[in-house]
Image: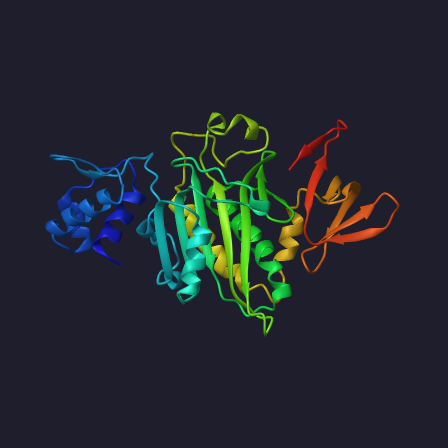
Length: 333
């Protein structure tokens, strides 16, 4: 690890506490000049590092900057060498990942941003970005998959993010088939997967799962038309126990782990366990209108098994579903 990374690690572990330049130099076995240079580099990356005579350096408790060094610090050793790029703001991390794929960047790789100006979800919907409130990330993966199996990447990604959120924050989300996570009845994460397939062989060349997490956003920061359906893991809190870099690193870790489960499809059990639809009446929307059905299962291919009003069963591979609330109305999810 670099001196900059080591300094950041020490400051991160004891946020709100001051370390003198001498203490940092002694513990890291480097010169005080090297510490001073590392602190300067961190400040250029956007870190607010407090400093004062006879006090040393301190990372404020409410500091939350997404950075490559910050993410690498929380990765297990075997993952720290992977390709990571972090942007304060970009158009779309999926776009960057696709460009990287075209340039032959080795997989796995991950592209992370605090804000997106052209982020989008399924069916071309825009993705809301709030300064300091989001985690936007896209993976470049090259799994050995047939085109028909690429759908599992989205399902697997849902489970990976679900695991990461639970491990880092203690929050247990609900999964809405096929690509969203909900907390306290509101959407806090959306996933959009894009695949590039070799038309001659039918083999997937690369898969790009894009993940958008609403991390720390106050309700009033959402546009009025979204406040009933969109939420965040934290509601604009000043002090929270984790950082975006911690959660982003855990998502990377869990994503790489779940990729090893694709052949066995073992993650489907977890996906079903946390489904917010199974056992509920839903509306199925299609080009011909809507139909009422009971969501009964997730099949081995990740499809939603529903039971129609006439008792017939049908497997949905794509589509929009709406949960029917007890009062008799409907609540879009």
